Image (cartoon, rainbow, N blue to C red; front, side):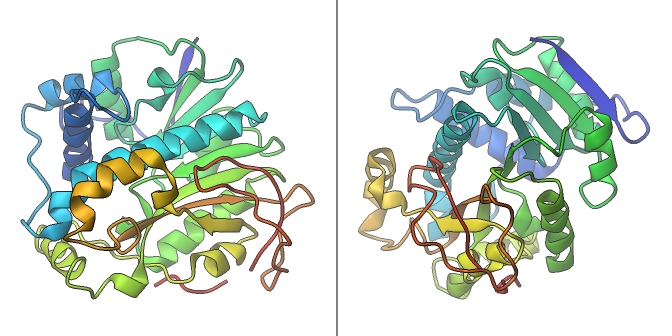
Length: 322
């Protein structure tokens, strides 16, 4: 399928690592390591190519308990959102928007339904590095469009100019993104996402659980990140209520209902009880078919999103982001 490119800003410099964040390289390093496992939860063959081009990727800072869990967390997170996006597109949502896409390769590695259009939004320099490695390869089933834009700027205009249709239901993904942003930036970003979302749209997001940010499990990790210059700024309490304030009916996944997550977390659970929810949480959400719920919207009669990320139905309620 064809690949299109839309640049909202001036062309990036050609250097291999210009503008590619250290955190993106940490992530792609863990994706490459996961893909090499016999029991891998996903197969990201391009990750090793990105690593080779980068030359050095480093590792997340510190050596605490959470750092030991991180590779398995990333594997579970990736698989969870893979399943979520495939489920929601198979239900007829033909637009997918990856916000802060970084070195994500889902456009290539997932078996998308015919007609799926994947938009990847990130900074021009990140897009330039990624395209240099991909070298003109195109996805087997999806149409892929890169949108070079700053999520702290006018990314809305760039996305619309790239062919995004706000009248059509969309599957949005904010993976490994929101906790790096200031609270007011998160509010602007999600406000824009909500304005661009037709009824029936879905969203997946990874959030830092504010209720456990001070725990012995999480606090050393947050301190290590701050010391390395990559702090996690935004924390979320009461996810259902906060997302409901933007018109989304949201649900926090219970990862221990998923066999692959139980198997992968099993070595950690004895030492770190609650590992599946006491640091990051995975949220899936939908805009009801009858439109967004109000800020003090009604609690739905029944759930719309299963714990495995699959989607189906209605409304909820704000507050809780920090």
